[in-house]
Each structure stands twice: as structure tokens, then as C-alpha cells.
Length: 318
Image (cartoon, rainbow, N blue to C red; front, side, top):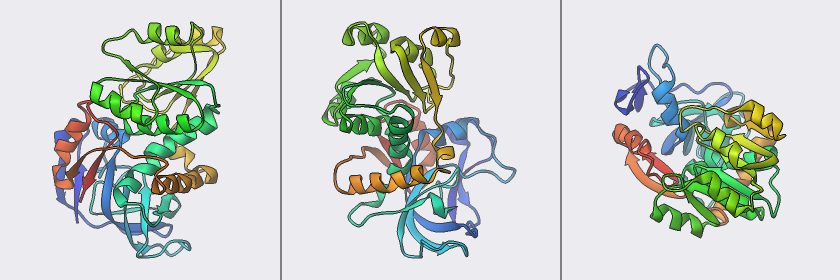
């Protein structure tokens, strides 16, 4: 099969589109023929920073397609089913093996591209709002990085909970699209003093909670937060994180980290993805696809992902 592989961490051009052995389906896994790959922020970060295996690493968390084989211990999946999958790598390929427990049957009526983007982006956002922030109607949420896949998901899910939603992003076209999804206030981090704007919008109180998907904005997130509020750090697109813990302590604020891959050990977390797929099928949730690339153009796709002009998700097609 053909796959994108990197043999050393670095810029997008470390990726090679080459022939590699098809993965073997493990006892607790499903093997799928990949039809759509959602290029996640973590895929870009891992390619840039994570050391590959001695034989090279196929990057990628999220892919959807059709099951061609199931492991001997797998009881609730069968060849021919369409599924969305997560694994810690291996999505950038024509075939991928993934834990059966980290696969979700795609509901009839939902296309495979949309399904590929749901488990990571919407799963992360939904779990952050429910299990970490316990977001309530009437509260104000600030999303750092509102134009990415998780940000787009969080805007919709927070509005469904009755929250007021602020988000940092740039670009008038992106702002208009996100207002359609329910965003109340867009804050342009390139042109505005975010802390001053937030304080004005909240009558100097600060927001109730922050979903930080950037990481390098962590201190700014706490500066925007009310006393006793919570910041969830669920992304690291900015490459570095730093916060004044003494200031956090003085304001009785909370910092909570969220890595969705670890949360998938929780049966309730896994089950939440089925509900999100059904909501996408019913049109309650919208996945925004910025661009599609052929998998053979993976270098160009990763370069585009790093230009910070993306709205929603990039899709790769084998």
C-alpha cells in the first residue's frame, strides 16, 4: 500500500509518499480501507516534533473508511461496516489498523468525510465542555483558536448549552462563517488587545471559562478569566505553554489539561462520539471542510495546515 511516512521530525517536506507493508490487524483491532483522513493539529505537531520509529512513522490520528478485517477478539464489528477510527498514528495511508474500541459505526446518511472529522475535533470539544468546564447556560466561554476543527466544534456545542461564546481568530471571511454557527463575538488577536476587549465585554468581570487550543496563549487566557474560573488546555498549536501559577493561586483559578487520546480509555467518553456522529447526520452539528488534498500531496497539505488560514478541517484522500 501507499502511505505518507517520515523518518525524522521536521518541516512538512520530511514526509515521503512511498510503498509500505499493509498493516496487520491485531486481535483487538479493525483494519479499514481508508476513504477520508482528517488532518488534525496533533498530526502536524507530531510530524514536526515527535521522533519516528526506526522504520519510519505513518502519522495521523483520525481516518474513516470501510472495515476489511477484524481481530479474533472483536465481537461488535464486521467487514463491510463503515467506521470512523482513532489511533495514535497510521491515518495517512491507504489502510490503517486501529483499536476496535476506538472505532465508531458511521450512521446511515452521514458521509465519510464528515465522519472522519467528528471523533477528534468534536469529541475533544464536547468532553472539554462537559467533563472539565461543566459549561452552563448563561455562562461566557472564551475559545482561544476558534477557527480550527476543535474550535469550530466548541462554538456549536457551547451555543447548544446556552452559553455566550467569544473566540480569538483572524480573517473577515472566517469570522462571518463562524457567526453563522453561533459565535457571539470574534476577537482578532492580530489587531485587538484581547484582555481589554474581554474585560469590556464582561463588565470587568472576566469570562467564566476558557478553552485554550493554542497553548502559547495560556497566560492571556488567565488574564481574561474571572476569579474562580477554569481554563482547559486542550491543544498546543502555538508550540509553547507558560502560566504564572502564583497569580492563578491568588485568583482561585483552575487549570485543567485534556488529552483526548487518554480520555478514550473511559467508556463514557467513547460513547459520546456515537451521539456526535448522530447529531452530524441529523444536521444539528456542522463540520467545516476547508480543503481536500490527495494523500500523495501530503507535503502541500501539511504546509497549508501550518499557514494558519484554515477554517475547520483539511481532508486527505488516499
